[in-house]
Length: 307
Ligand SMILES: C[S@@+](CC[C@H](N)C(=O)[O-])C[C@H]1O[C@@H](n2cnc3c(N)ncnc32)[C@H](O)[C@@H]1O
Image 1 (cartoon, protein in one colour):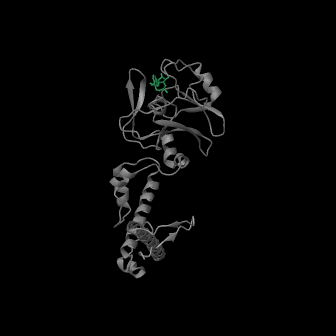
Image 2 (cartoon, helix red, strand yellow; image 1 turned 90 degrees about the vertical axis):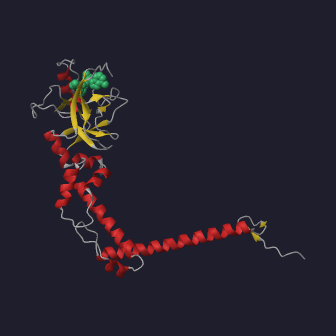
Image 3 (cartoon, helix red, strand yellow; image 1 turned 180 degrees about the vertical axis):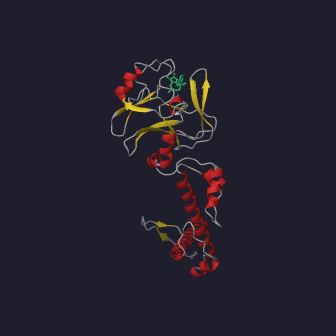
């Protein structure tokens, strides 16, 4: 009689198969040990999670709190003491970076300002690096939060937008160029001028020449009303002697890097804010699509022959 052969039945089909060979056995045992390992890792993670929860109950993660010492971490879990400490420190670092972000608002601050502000906080350890904060900086929160921010409101009043310069070239007249990098989503500047109704805007436009370019921004505000920002005068009444940036931004469909966004402030004032649609490098010209096809903007009704 030959050697007795094992067989097993596939539970799915009920068909009889040959017993597994050595290679198949090896696969089965690897699969089992992987499953076992996964279960052990999950248990471990649950233990770590529970231990961390106990730690933050005893030492909540706060901006000013001292990091837990090893004695406290060991008391909570001798197995995870280092991981508990590292996790706590990382959570506080995240909180501190968020705090810096909220303090400086929706515009990229300078490294010097961040560095000074950080040192004023008096944090003795686990201190964020200003250089790293600037490198990692990204616009934070929703566009509406950014547009509502005090800093943006102040800049729409003062017109002291940073990181921009007015240039002049023969073909398009004046334009605006970035003197620092802007990140996608960042507020770059506004289109500042006298806010009038669209019909007032059209009647003013019919009285001014177009030789120096058209400086009117027609749009629909958040209440659905047709409005216009009239910037036909090079300087506005509230900033005599100062060229504001928005009215000098040129058009490009292919190279556009900004999009205008109409926003109505709580005091019912309408503003147009330009947001970066991509990362903008230093020395890059700021451009947006004037929107010849869009009823919301100036182009359709006006003959922009150069578009
Ligand atoms: C809102 S202004 C922009 C600033 C203008 N370049 C200036 O010097 O005052 C719009 C005018 O700029 C000019 N312009 C803007 N984009 C242009 C482009 N891509 N090519 C040619 N002219 C352009 C047109 O004369 C247009 O009417």
